Length: 285
Image (cartoon, rainbow, N blue to C red; front, side):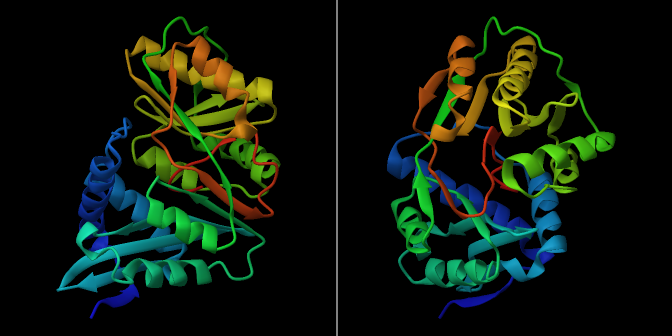
């Protein structure tokens, strides 16, 4: 019988390998390849190390036949609960492992006023999230090599810019990411700042988080990120564009990107703030 237990730091390499197996299987089944950069083990150590340090009671693994066969990792920031990771070994799907893992991760958010899940397109996962009572918002992803993007006042950022990110986060989702931003930077992501207006993080050509004081500022921040990719000849990947983020669509189209449906929907419930203008983080919501 599978065993479900709290996740340990020593589980991170196994969870990292399981991510590759689970998402690779999903791509093969759905016939759509995810175009973003694949995580490296060093990045997974930082990501899960951060979550285990802040939310040890929200992270669980399942063991089957002596190896890790599933993982569910949830975080709580202020009044917000978010599902940071949920994966099950393809060979163990349908055994009840996923249901037990998700139940424990969801229970970690008891008492929270808002919930966020950024989903894959896996049909089983989508049904599970809907049963939690969250509302589904379809999303599109913009992909391609940006061209002719005008430069904006976006500059590289650092730890001194955390007060700005926290101020903007409170406006768009009610709760700051805080030092989650520094964990993202430690994992190789570049923090980009529009002074007084907004910020973004990117990993190569992938925009991993963007928040701004208003839609014009958000559009300028996104243009600034895409312009830097153009200079580096990076293929861009902008995900989690829901109906709330209409401001992002003309920016992506003007840059020559194409809209696709390779990504999954966004699930939210309760008090998540206006949730715009905002492109959330897959790891830190």
